[in-house]
Image (tube, rainbow over all chains, first blue to last red):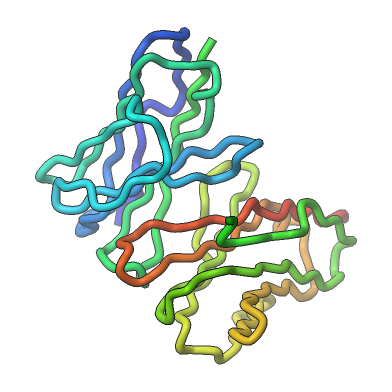
Amino acid sequence: KAGVTQTPRYLIKTRGQQVTLSCSPISGHRSVSWYQQTPGQGLQFLFEYFSETQRNKGNFPGRFSGRQFSNSRSEMNVSTLELGDSALYLCASSRTGAYNEQFFGPGTRLTVL
Amino acid sequence: AQKVTQAQTEISVVEKEDVTLDCVYETRDTTYYLFWYKQPPSGELVFLIRRNSFDEQNEISGRYSWNFQKSTSSFNFTITASQVVDSAVYFCALSEAGYGNQFYFGTGTSLTVIP
């Protein structure tokens, strides 16, 4: 079974630009969550999508948004990039329910210059 | 308030030593789930174990063991006879029933096993 895939793996942008990250979950998984990982803040939950609907949202500004498609693939968008948005963005997929472990992709390393 | 606390930021042990990673959690829910993940230098988070709030039975899997104690809100992880390949950052996480798949992660413990 193929794991969670994320594209691109690395991205370099400049302040003020916007970026779109993509995530393909494990086949059969309908829940996709996004996390931001930085050395200072650790792993922070961004949002979760299930059946094309945002089910949970973390404490991030509105510049961070996402969506999920009917095939469960998900995209995350960050507009008006700031230097502090430089991070590893991790996507995780799982079956629905808080008891299910999440399977993580390799992440997208975003650098904002 | 931090829902998951991993007080140990970095730990170094010599190969073959035992090491315990601490995790303390905070929740008002009666139904919740605890997880341990490993993040090796390659960066990908790897799931290790899940425990639900109704199951305090401790578990051993090879060199790994987990000690879940609701009375102290702790979910500690022990590696016996550590190996160099165990070097990684270990994360403890909490999810609460009724909140979908939102995980609260601790800040991680970086384990270095010295040969």
